[in-house]
Amino acid sequence: MYNPTRRNRNIGTKKQGHGQNNKLTISSPYGDLKSFYEKLTDYRKEVRLINNHEFVFIIENTRKNSMHSCSINDIQKIIENIPANDYGELKYIILRQPKRKEEILSPVWGRLIYSYNFENEYFPAIILDAIDLKKQLSWPKKQTIENQQEFERLKTDGHTFTETKRNFIAEFQPQNIRNTQLYRTLPHEFGHYVHYLEVVERPGYKDNEKDMDGDACDERMDLYFRIPKNEKEKFAHTYSEKFKNKLIDENKIPFDPLD
Image (cartoon, rainbow, N blue to C red):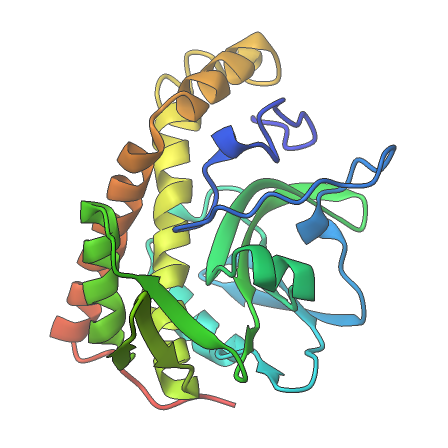
């Protein structure tokens, strides 16, 4: 079986491809092997068994004016509808308070971390960032095809944009943030993980089980990290959209916030 403590050399680099529309790069202090998103402070944790799979929810306290848009119960309700086969070794669901510098450089809705160090254990993690309601959502006027597609998704989520000379601006509203992070970002990051499973762990797993702790694992991980970012994003968006449309057709979403 794949050993998550064997961290691939691409972990924490741009090649990792974590998060949708994520351009944030913040270096760690010299000698500190932890990435910035692994440095949690003032948090609590709660263990939930979902479809016989153990998830550990880690919730950082937020700053003034910041909020976590989704509750643990909200997230559990979504995860319950994701096929258990797609959970893999994913264990941590983190509601994180980003630092101010991170919010300034490049705020993100969420990210997938393939090997996350929490209390000296390593497992895959999905992180959803807290959002500062005093800030605004800014979108450029000059857009790539991918940016245009995401812009339309944001408007579908309920974000109302006002045009300025240089960009489009939307005020953060709790319900719209929840729509984005709960119904799109969460399954989007699961989509990234499923893509990883399909490339790294699922092909020929039984034939190479003895080798998955060594070179075979690293080779497949290198293969995955060489996949172009736009291809990874396309896979994750497709996974998320199919999942969301299925739940809409089954009248399972949207649903009122759960305490």
